[in-house]
Length: 433
Image 1: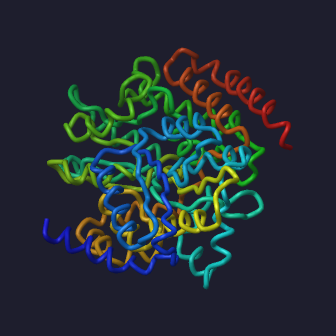
Image 2: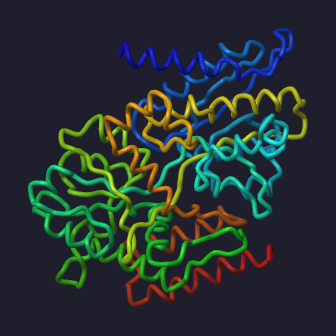
Image 3: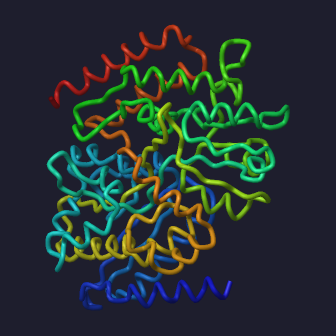
């Protein structure tokens, strides 16, 4: 506990210079909304960072509000409309084009361009982290904060006891899962059950050869051969061997929140989950937690980025001082010092390259090399689904995938179902082409 306290004090000293010279009589209050999507003391950690910022910046008071899930947070912002509107929020990086279309956010680029060395600031972020921050013209609108990727977690003690090599592709993945499957333990859990299988599916779509989206926000590739192969693979994971499947997990996949719980309880040999779950798993497992590049394709690993960026909101009535104060807070939260501490406290992948050479993250990686795996996996990461009219399109993708994965739509009808969904998606995107 003492070591943790000292580390937090180091962060405070390092970030004290992040101030913009607003005098005390010009007090500015900023509302800050943030969601969580992983287990752990995330709320108290973020509130602690806010307290540090407020202490270091007299004249600015940031009021943090935990607003539930990403969906609940966005619903809160949308429900508020333009009067009032939040000042800063952590929202999904994939919400970018929706917010741009709604004209409710201010581009971070406008603040970056006024920095002493804009290139140094931008270049310190891992390139993959900025894939969902830029629009098609290259303008940076949002700043990475709690970013993650799909990772493979495995019970390293089981692997060592059985002499099984860590899988590097889907064929090896299934072989390892079948070898470790017992009556009381699933070989592999992939959390695609429920209402949002899209994120996990994207890692496999990329691994089978075609990411769901790329740089052009008017293009979505949902009925490709790779998409069919990906959804077929995910379905067969939970299909019994008698019915032609692999039979190493539950039919329809596992539920998101229950997957890490089952892993910690010894009820799964391997799981796919967010890299943001790393700290929680390491802190609570009574076995050695292994982390590997997600072996999501027949040729090798592939993963997809996820998580939230920081957005600055404006309804057109905010003063430049208020906007500058909001940027000071965003700059603080994305600083290498905070990102280093945040990577340890939460398990999210620190977005700044220099953060990995700072304490406490540098020592944490030395003690637990698993953190370094989630960083190095950025080399095989693709951008997360992002498009115009993303909310409606995401709904189509989610419902289509859920129908196939649950067995409601037979696999022999999967291609036709994907074609129908693609036609609906293209109908929505035609206006932007």
